[in-house]
Amino acid sequence: MLEFLRIMLDARFDPRDERGASAVEYGLLIAGIAALIVVVVFAFGGTIEGIFSDTKTCISNEGSGTC
Image (tube, rainbow, N blue to C red; front, side, top):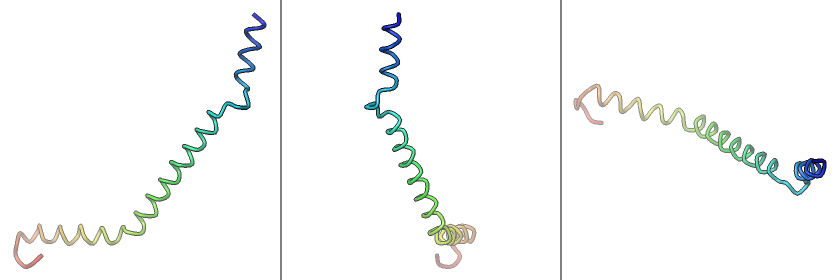
């Protein structure tokens, strides 16, 4: 029983185990993607709002005028 416990503890605290490092890397990757999305939304938000506004106006006028 003690031998089994020793083997389990040795496996648990193995310095070659990189599962935690992988989780941190994935977390940093997700944080970077989220930051990029925020930057893109702030950079192009006004332009996209203008496009949707123009489209809404054209649809509301139902063909009267040029779009």
